[in-house]
Image 1 (cartoon, rainbow, N blue to C red):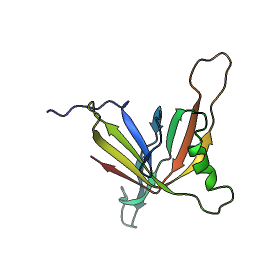
Image 2: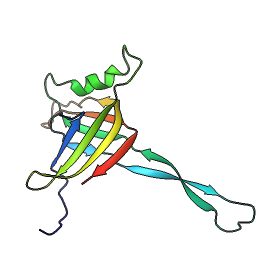
Image 3: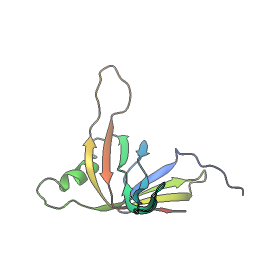
Image 4: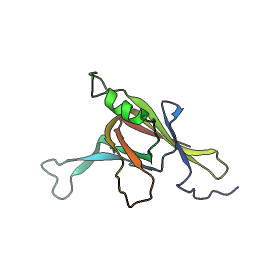
Length: 144
């Protein structure tokens, strides 16, 4: 079978190995490396460049609000109320092929929630109420 580009609409999200429901959107899976420039006194034109710190962007999950389903909210609040430590978890996003098999996955290590946004409300709208959870993490791996 030939290689083919995969659609971005079929995926799963797991937090600590537990399927946490269907998410309508996952954004922010990225990593970048800081560039350190160094110039010695006799270097006239171009400084040398070295890799510095690796930085990971925050990942945002969006999903339809389910009555009674406040696990994501509770995860965030567990680290800021009544406890001095955040609850760090591994979050895995897996891209699925047309047959439902795993084709690629991204694993965010030591993730913890930093922002929760509840749904917007409007009496004239007919869309699903969507809640958003943003989390930060300390490392990102990609597996095939």
